[in-house]
Image (cartoon, rainbow, N blue to C red):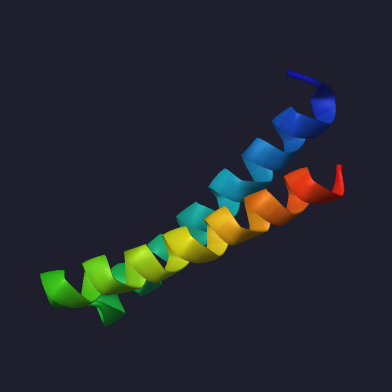
Length: 55
């Protein structure tokens, strides 16, 4: 891994640590959690595909 990839991974982990408690407290039902996680998974996959198309 290059240095910029390591820094990006650390940044994403820090954001996840900051967001996760609020996400879990607002999504108290299991069905709602899975629904929101699936939406975020689709968004992330679309972003990854766009990045690979651009490169």
